[in-house]
Image 1: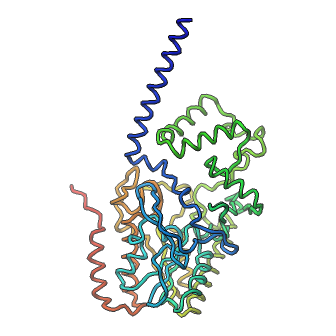
Image 2: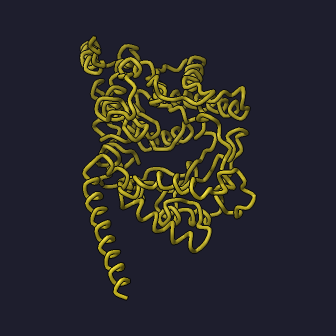
Image 3: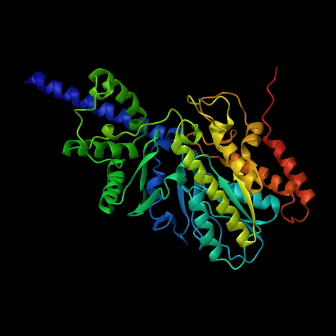
Length: 445
């Protein structure tokens, strides 16, 4: 009996020591770059978007400022009366309307966004009405709604295209809002054939939203035990840096030791609601970089994009504005050392958009070449959030990338003479001077 008491006492002391060590490690890690693992920015975006019958969702107008922190960045977001992440605007001055997705909407403070930088360099207001997750189809509908609320048309409408627009437009409307959070309406179930699933069951969408909040995933629990384990795991995922660091290595060890039957590829004995039974067939690279000649559904999707550029030109012409296409560059397009999957043609989306614009006579500018010129191509494990052009843990442009994009855009507009900008030559000279600071340092020796 005495031995048992001693063993229990030793066990309790060991447990307390482990708990104290974990607490100290957790506190220390909260002051390092690893803190991004528990920031949960998505939960803080509750009610930022509202459901919309046409586009699936949109930004809720007139939201007061609130702070979010993601990865290497803490900044304020809000919305103006037009439902745009921008300062209030009543249309009483000459302006440019900027459309786009998350690259043009946020992931930097407003004053550092490419539209703000371009507007300052041009000396003309750029009204930034990009919406995270929209492709060209949603962006054009956003433009119609914004323009309907303003007394005067813009001088120019800029459509900032991202490579993944072709997928987002193919699946449009991609998402809706349930209980304040965005949830997928359409899921691409087979990337080889282009088959997709549309979710029309409101109760199912509500369950997925509840699962996201409670289980950190929209997939349902397989049992009461599975629910309890995943609920606890979700709590730890959102609140413990140590847990997040240890999670993936622990999973790999458990799978190797246990020889989980899923790894053998035999899914016949899995329950019908197990996620592994319904995993979509994937291509070896993102669908927007894949060859349409190999996957016919992509030919149809790109034909749809061509029609959207026709719509874009018509919208601008009907408004009395100049249409302008801006091609956003993703990090894997810019940095030559980034790994690319087999069959990945990272320049394909840009060639497609250029072809559309040339056929329609739409002025256009591709950021890819400019970013390649100014990017530090020295291979590294992670992006430098200050000196590189993209964030460390995310594919979006960082502050420096946004500033470079804004300056290059303003330079192209000034050089093209498309807009009657006062003191254009002086402003061009100023931009060229600023661009010198973006040139990568020359390596010695």
